[in-house]
Length: 323
Length: 287
Ligand SMILES: [Zn+2]
Image (cartoon, rainbow over all chains, first blue to last red; front, top):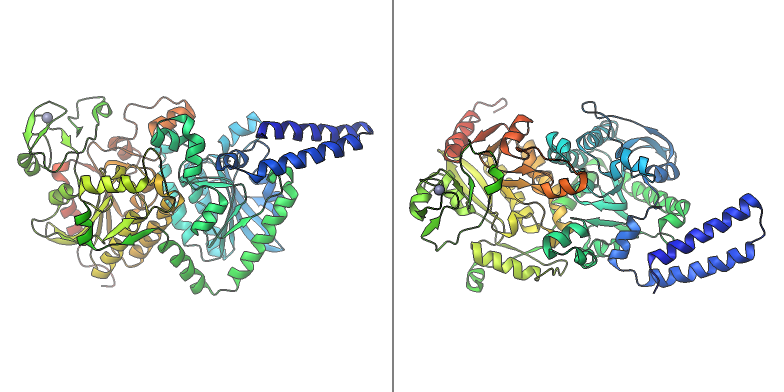
């Protein structure tokens, strides 16, 4: 059976061969094409029967393109704006001005790190109050200047800690949601990696919510659900399956609007192609949203979030009998 | 069962314990002092132990009775029940969990909404019930809170939320998460209509409920003995290896850090709400 370890080992070998050919000029193209065919074959096998837990691992893949890598590929002239004007600048949630297809936009994104040093600096993409306050500040710019707001979501969740609680992380997330819902310009969110709970939804309450094929979006981490509901860490893959966190499942539920296909092997195997897909989708959705007058845009947004949920109305009498 | 005993006791969180009582129990044992207390007497005393002053856990119904003018409450909770959008099964299927909670509480879901008067002031009052799957917010709770706010707008009376929640309801997945923007959205409508919104944080007010509707009130009270926080202590300790201060996520912690306006003892909650409501009554600019 193919697992992600086998895949990674082969991916490493291909990368090493490419390096040898490019840097040392060795004649290894035959070996390379052989390995690449083998890799392609294994990937097809692996991706044909992807479990939701496999998707979680892909969404968290150490080589998955991070926020800034995608932003630099998707947008032009990204100009970072920093600070929440109160506590400081949280680099786990970044943002700024940019151009998309020649038009100005405001961008927000979670930032994860690759190296240990980066992971510390970005706190694994877990933003605290300063991050969400900065997000609300940038949403305010989009609102006042009527610039479309685009967010790229990739966080395990908001940062849990004494300092975060001391500075009212919950209230800051609530304000971020409130501010995003009231932006008087089109908003589009793309879940590009992990959409972890409140820390994700804080910048994902958009007119359109898109999701990369192997990204996840969940009310709780599978590990957390396994601990709380199954009382058993070994139930984590089962929890991943139960939570309905995959892009196709969320599309079926109507929570997201579109699944953006990733290259075979996942976004990390071809970040450029992934960015092209995201850019094309953003421009298409923004075109549609730009054609709506403001009152209609806001009315549609209101309806979308007012109506979300799954429940049924009953006759109270029958309920009492059932008990 | 008692969630608060006396202010001198240091490690209050150590005996914060919520074992819901059954409606048919005539006598309840105070888990703080061990005395048996007659339920009726307890009810007259806002469910505070007459022997030691410990707070007993309150159901939504008991909470409502403790806050509103006698005979003034009309139940306007919509007859909604949860679906099972994910076909969620952990150690038991989600529909079974809901049924059990319904049987145990007599409620359809984790919130009860009434039109009532508090010290003469008409309000729409929504009270969450922690016994119902930890007071978690799923699709039904989100919808009930929105309907309650819309009713307050329609009637032109203040909206009061008594929060008691462990957070978003895991069994409805991202649909539970979506109740955060949903309730925040309608809270915005309440604001535009100029309707006052008062929130009371009771044991516990945490997670997705705190990170949405509960944090956006005009005036926020915390009941003595509550727990207020976004992330659970276990998650924080595991993720950050931080040592938590002894008063972490208590009402005094929240008050000192500017998250609530006041900490109020349970027996004073009704008069405190009455005072605020009368301060907001009449004479506003623009009629
Ligand atoms: Zn006692």
